[in-house]
Length: 321
Image (cartoon, rainbow, N blue to C red):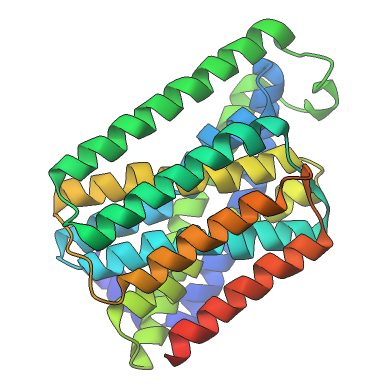
């Protein structure tokens, strides 16, 4: 494994390109498989996006943070999680809106987004005013389990109402159940390896430029590990599955702060560095703004430009100051 990593670092440009290709292919398979599964089970694409797809696209953050935490790089872990959530809202949701108008269901506006805002506020407060230890990890995981229970309850209701092969999704079914799960799992594997390859290539190049750990984690690594969300959202939007695109972003952010972060803390407690307030403030602010922009039940071109502009401004601020 060390030999492979060293080789990838030495050839980081080729590693970066290979990672991007794997991410695009994996995102395509993940969307196709997820839509097919939702169709056959009669579960809404929003629920699939909030759970299966969100967990799948958050796997690079989880893998990276587990390794970084074991090696004692707490700053890198925090930068990755907070930076990824900022990128998911500003970059991923923004790009999705630039490609097409993204309808947002009333449930996301009234329930999922408020939960995301609350969870972001809770995690941000704990980061700034306390050491992230095992007690906070259990609090975050309990909240995560509650939300997962809610989503699976909704999924069961959808399944009982729609039933398998419901007419609402019939036009999306093009494969067997086994093929659908195979595509989803293959997409997950490709996203995992693609995210890791992209991260190695991007980080090696960034460190060569002398960037510090929290900046690398909050910008380069965050973008690299958010590429699965970017690819999945773009493909879902282009294929006409906006619920899957929006659910992927909201669900992935919840997974990052209520699942990936506490798992990271359980491996090793984290004491936030002095500059963490910048990432916490931007993460909470852009999440609140995104919630406000969805109030008319769709994210249009104008909203997409606002979100992308905010993200670019964040990158410039962090990079320069």
